[in-house]
Length: 190
Image 1 (cartoon, rainbow, N blue to C red):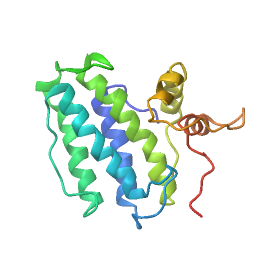
Image 2: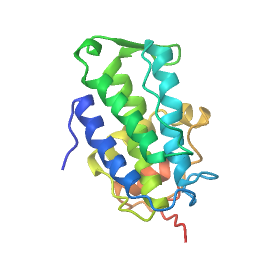
Image 3: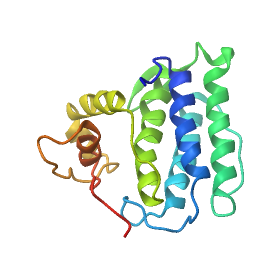
Image 4: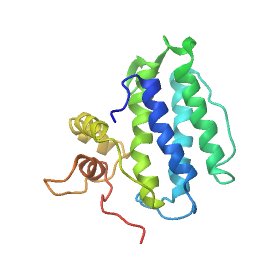
């Protein structure tokens, strides 16, 4: 099933899948495919970086939930619901996001490009860490990979992505994306 084109609906779908994975976690302190991160740290990352990014570029403050250390499920849910509320609010439809590194973008496009894509990729990390279904939408994998390959040097120099992990030339698109972002697509906690 193809992901929706509208940023609000795409976030609802991608964040919904991540929410399902969060609710399926049975052990939060297991290692993840991200070096030195646990499953809990995947949620900590998503709930930690985006509120400041959004506030600095728009002045919009997201609601604060419990700590990821105390309740990662509730922390994620409060955060996720707050992002969705921003995307669904007609008052924010015409707002712009402004950042010295990205320039000015429509708010929904900025959330989609920087945050929703991050949730999508980290869904694999959390799923793989916790033994859940790690399949991602192949069309969106192709779209993200196509967009990132042209700016690989910028991405790598940002420190946000590890070195590319080589995968077989005939690998599926998800495996190629996971390798591109610096994860071993064949990583296993066992």
